[in-house]
Image 1: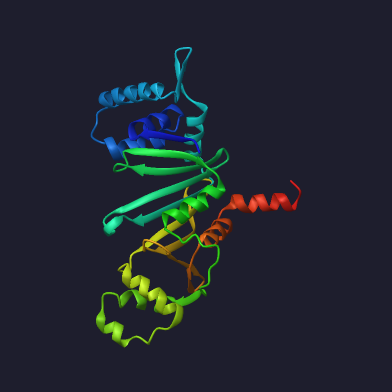
Image 2: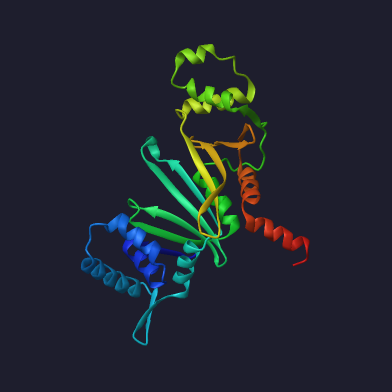
Length: 266
């Protein structure tokens, strides 16, 4: 897997260089809103030299252009057909960590933020890499078999389990828990009810994001459970590597297109 690391200044330069001024201006406003135009211009010039030193910018005929590899990253960021955003609670429950995957015509980019979002790391990955990365990110068991039954909860039942974590009176008032429901409740108690989220997005013609599915995961250090809302029920299952593979296949258009292509002999 090839990897590219950019500072926030370099990323802004790249958007400007490719003509994506709206995206560049948005980042500039967030990170350098108080910087005047002259100082920002100096910052972009320094960024250009830095990218040139990394061999990510070419200089020819008195013109600077992004390398083909870097241009593909910026294009995919700007024209993603689908994006997966994964977030989890940092160690100790303080703060939040994020990782995302941008899927476009030119490939799939894994996007990681480091050092308070001042460094962006982009890695070219495959569809299979996404499943492996998400399993590792949410600390999913790698056993090929899942011997646990899927648990179905109404919204009221799910909320009641979370409520009793901080309310002892509610804990005594609820019905006795058995089987998978008791196992699920145990991990909620162990992790203080912290839940991590996996968000699947697609984009309309105006590049506006539309959430197509939201998955939650428990926050244990290993063997986590997955929670997915389907219609009026929450489906809760103790997941493994195969569970994540199926989740990706069912939610990523690229997988479906590959299957359709094979079916039609493409």
